[in-house]
View 1 (cartoon, helix red, strand yellow):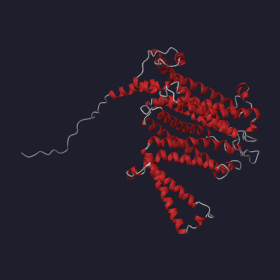
View 2 (cartoon, helix red, strand yellow):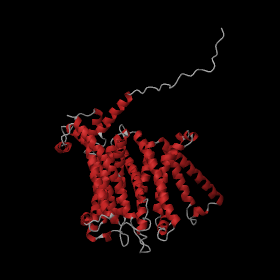
View 3 (cartoon, helix red, strand yellow):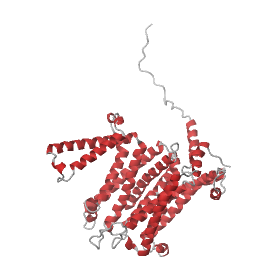
View 4 (cartoon, one colour):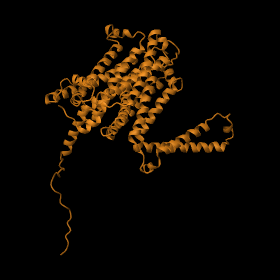
Length: 527
């Protein structure tokens, strides 16, 4: 019989058997959203794609945006579980299970987006039966299938020792189906040396294979766009651009999910600031690379000013899609500011940090918003007409000073609150990356070569199905972590053993090399 640490059992295993009313209410809400989305999708299948905002020549819309975004979220598991495991980063252990689960459910929901986008979803099998080797669509479907299977296999291999722990620690009053489920999934695991050796070998092999599979999925998906002659898509850097964006959004979504489970399940003892600081370093690197690719991609279009390319860029800079484009840029700037600038503040500003509390920032923000409304109010309003020019100038000075103080105070607040600031940056990145996927697809499909201009606006059907998709992305891990621990128990225990062994290692101080140097002068005290 496999045993588990008492503390781990009380925090990670016992909560699996205690389900409160709040859990069921959340499940009912999510099921309601999914049910409504399913009904709207039934209407789409019955009536046709005319229920959506898709039209000629706009054949791709919000479903394809969701697909690219969701496969990007899946890179969290590939990066954390596979890449960091191969590099031996021990800080990854408490968040490995959450990252892998997010990958699996993200890929499953992403695969559904392809079916949602098809007018005849039963013909999906035709891609494999009649697909051409020259077609990126065939290779994209193949990469997605391999990625799903590999991710599910990696998740199960990581779960196997914990399933055996659950099998041997089922409470007496637990439902019988749980005991049967754990016995069936444990596959006779007993934790002997030979089983551990084989498991480590399988996990290492899977980690090596899953990285190129994940990269290939995002690269082949980008080829669907870049191998066409549509303006805005024909680019050689679209492949690495998709991979960078996937890792960027994957880290952001992982931080949000990890923090939610950390707070709601009381996992502060396992998920500590070390995990946030390490992910922050990765976040900063990906932020810089993302800005580099974004600048390079748009600079080449501006410099070339081709007849077909420039209208697409103009629609994003100051045209129809300017709000989504500049919204994306603004969110990414805020995220990068939160990640980098608080660590660069001079010491005299850091001493003022206690003065800027959350309540103070809220008050300053409300005041700044009120002054902005007054200053930008239409001139025909009576109380705006009564403002003399000198008063308006004074209000502008106050507004600028308030905004400056607000920026400094917010930056100092981010320095004091690591986890909260990381959540702010993560939300900005996740929303910004969804907008980035929108800005890649929609401006191009509305500016095709054969038609001067087209329009697209998501219909209520598409919005309902999108809401149902994200509800499934939430519901899947929610139910999964009521069956299995959110923290990998055996990996955390292994990390403790490694940390204890490293703490006992004594590193001798280096000895001087070479002959002992003589002092050039020696002063003797006279007798």
